[in-house]
Image 1: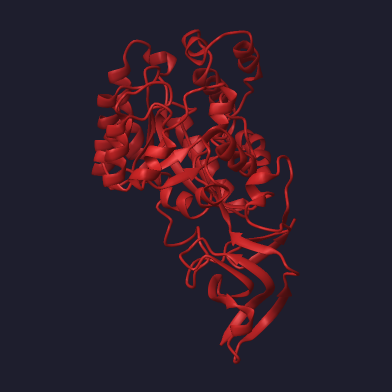
Image 2: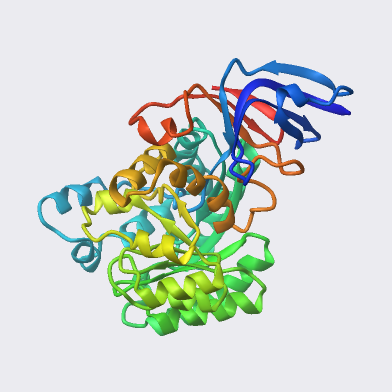
Length: 402
């Protein structure tokens, strides 16, 4: 058996039914996992060009951040301060702040400038073992600016060691030029923006903001129908600030995920369970907005709904560039177990992006994306606050020391 590299002296958190494999080994060939198991069971005919002693490290799949708005320009620390002085998220949005403030800054930025200000945020995630990331548009809200954002996202995937999945979020907020004409704007999203961006190969999925300060369920359904006509999968910002029936809507369309879910209803839980729609939990926004209503974790567990965890990196409600901290928050605020949190940023997050056959677990045939951690047990990843035990990141078989 030929391999490009074999990693020995490691413990494997496979994130599969096989569970944990202590004193394990893992072989890589052509950028994919060729073999894994107990080191004592390594094939006798294995010939590897490179042998690496993991020195007792734990190995997990590469982390997957399945919900980010990480490409943007501008700064909204003033809104953070305003909220501390009593303003609500909705009030800030209604007086021209919120998403629209970032739209102004992002529209004004050049493509190169937008790339330069966004890459440090991405690099912060990569230092913590992230190998796959979703990047949404939604701060352009016109064709040229949305195109610019998605082109920057593709460029990040080309120039940085990370796999990028792009999501078109044209229905994120109502741009100023469409004030009072939400239906007309949704028409432009469906008729002009989405088809053009899809033709250019810039769209892997489509999202919308179904909320009292965003778009109605009926308007989001128009977006979903346009995406379906193009064969593009959908997901939804749902039930963050109020119950708008978004989770039921996205489940009805076979959506990849419903995200936030603080106000998720029993009907929404049932619909997501039937459809296999992933619940993406975003504790960073819960923390920054000082929310008190927790997503119905027990109901999601009981219904067998897959739960993922993401950073939701964005300038207004979750300026978070640490997926490890998001894991800790998910445990502390939402009462996930450390095992659930780890699954939430690996195998379950891969499901939320439709990439479960490629990444998210340690299995033969999958892409060799994995991380070596200096920890005593996998639960340590959700336990320590402000500590990064990442030693080595391997993406498609190529190692990057931290």
